[in-house]
Length: 126
Image: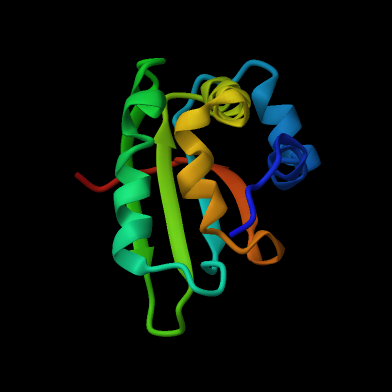
């Protein structure tokens, strides 16, 4: 399996103009929504275990509210992380690029399939 480089992650977290404008001073919670497929030969159970291995690194900033990892019937995975703010989401993305804890997780993702976006949470039903 191929190991994803920090440059790959930098390319996938490129912000849209709306993201950049919101990151300037917004303190509203944000969802990070990443869809992707696994690399050929990657095992679902091993991938979920690798995702569990990223938990400590994601939690260390204290800005992660919750995270969901799903896989639909087409084989598309979705990783949804709720952050306390856009600034925290972007800072976490930088920390992830430098973290060895993410290497096993990243290595199982097909880089050509990755789509990432950020969206502020405007309303939530509790």
